[in-house]
Length: 243
Image 1 (cartoon, rainbow, N blue to C red):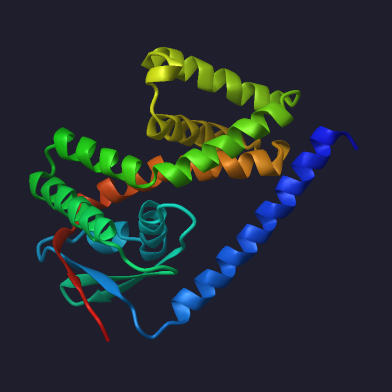
Image 2: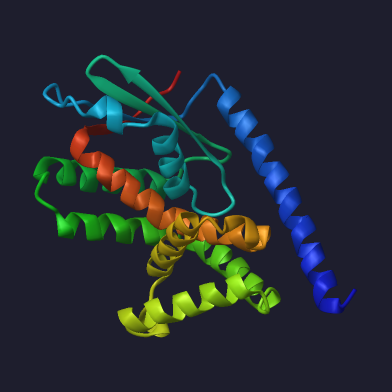
């Protein structure tokens, strides 16, 4: 085994251990009786589309993705009540002032997007995406680094080459690599994931490489998914709830 392969193996073992820790954190968070924070969503009475569009599990995953800043784990629980939806949040560390400010901001942006629907609110969508990018930058950059390392390690694989070519073309269309921000790359990864899923070739791609593409793509996918849900709900105020 070459030094490069040995290094990759050690990184893989480390990542597996981290994933096991995350699973343990999730079990702990979801089992807690005391939940530190909650967001209150009030459902519009005239809206008949919500039940079909509002997939609780998917929406919870979207929120969990954009609420985890670094190595922290966030648990999201949705409670559907008559005329409203309550979203309870818990994580494996304290809620800081910057966390509260971030949640206040994204709640405000989504409320404005909801109020302006069906008119597209470009300014609010841009501000929402920018807030997500800044807040999640540490974790997203870490995942981009792993994806970059995979691209070099599996460089001879035809599907990895295909991804590299796809990324280069999309970056060229946008402008250049230096001006392409991390959330844009997340969006390109999202496009690529949709492309390979449609082509039904996921099973031919190195599993570790594919997993890292999906992790990077999850940020843009989550942001888009949340924005698409916004017109179908009225976002109420954020408040602290202690049991």
